[in-house]
Image (cartoon, rainbow, N blue to C red; front, side, top):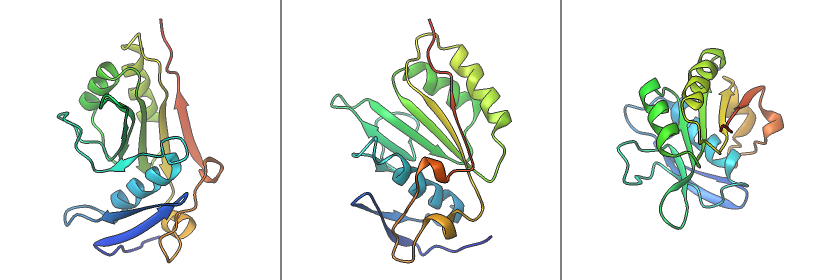
Length: 165
């Protein structure tokens, strides 16, 4: 299923609002996944921000920082390379990570992420993988921008083993 997004769209979830901006080189699926991730994790991370630089070489798609400016939660939408995953898992062992994919099986990604987790023996936070189906816009986004999405709505997601040593 296809959909189109305006360059800017006000979205809301759980009583909060955010203006999503669709970059000119960005696929609409990527922008939608960022909005869906923001909404899905908002109950657990109510101070999450979208596309906010945090002073790291990598810029998260969705992030919530602690009082010391370290990421408590970090989400990525779409393509994320092995080098980035390994780096993030090692450098931020207490950060809850999530990677969302658009209508893509999670098996290969799960293997790659689990291998990175296995090399980071002091990891203490979850690492989630999410597959958003092609009808996500129609299923989860109302015409007024209200996002209605809970974990039970997802057809496929995984929480990988996070605790070691």
